[in-house]
Length: 451
Ligand SMILES: [Mn+2]
Image (cartoon, rainbow, N blue to C red; front, side, top):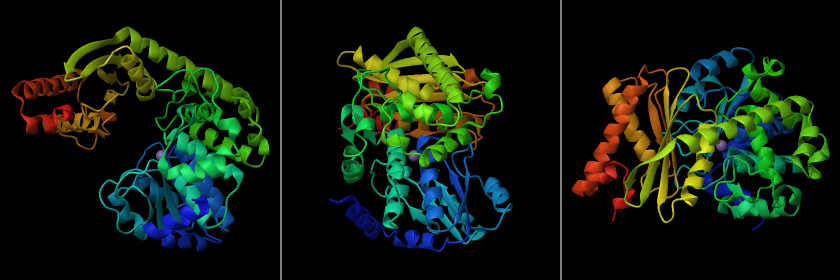
């Protein structure tokens, strides 16, 4: 199918026409865009800003460090000017956003995350309300732009970077999500061979299942991740006097602006071509150098301090404990696959536990098969911690079968207390395995015991 036709059908089938039409009403209005500070959020924000300008509006883009949009932040930004619309991009589809709709004429959510609760009042574009279609917010913004008959080759490029950042396209291993296939075939394969061609070079953070090949797209997206803080606010201000004043998220967002009007991207062959097409190659090289240093440091810590602690069914559980570990979840995904390559037939669940500078404890799980459901494990861990110590605003946990997080943040729960609850959960899993109780096992996320 042709991409434009696919877009029209998606808008009709999902009833998104009203959201698209609301963009036409933005003409001559100020529009406030809040977008996520990871590569998908940065590229989505840039596409949406362009689209707002295309329809004759003026866009102000904000890149707050919190993932969900905070009411007090929204209020303080709205107070600064007369806004006709707010767009929340790649920052979750959360039921309480409905409480924000009366603050502004149009309140629009564009997002690909599975919803938390039900959003009823906001204008919403999200294909993952029922079911799951792997994509990115950059891609949804691009679909919207295409539906309204705007967009350039540069926007195709931006949509692609967001898709890469959220793992919906993996050109190094020829895996492309079904939901983006028309776009990929028509807009990318024939026009951006330079970005998706397999090359032998340093493996990026996106090379999990193999470490032999990468692509320029992977390299560029990793660079956006590194310089913007990756949505985790991994900033390098205190590492270098040259960077002490730098606003990482804004700096990486501005690169997109610098590159939009120069057609360099058509002929980029190497990451250096990309870096040289920016206003401040010096700073970019500095930040990327620190990123790679941190990455290697964390990988070395993993290999020196990880041990096999339990085996459940066909899954070996490895545990790592560390303090103030940078880039932990991403490096953990790569290390998890390294463990798998050395584990023979066994599947691997890698549990990382980080004692954070601010006093919080961060549990991060990465699994190769999901026999033990990482998301259920983390949500069980969080609810046990909340049950014992209260403070459910600070303690959260959850995720997917293959990747999940649990964080205690500023709850005041000590490292030892958190570890004790963690060990209690593992012990209950051992008991459930010994007793053979399927119900209990399922509640504990031991999906390998399911029929
Ligand atoms: Mn995203």
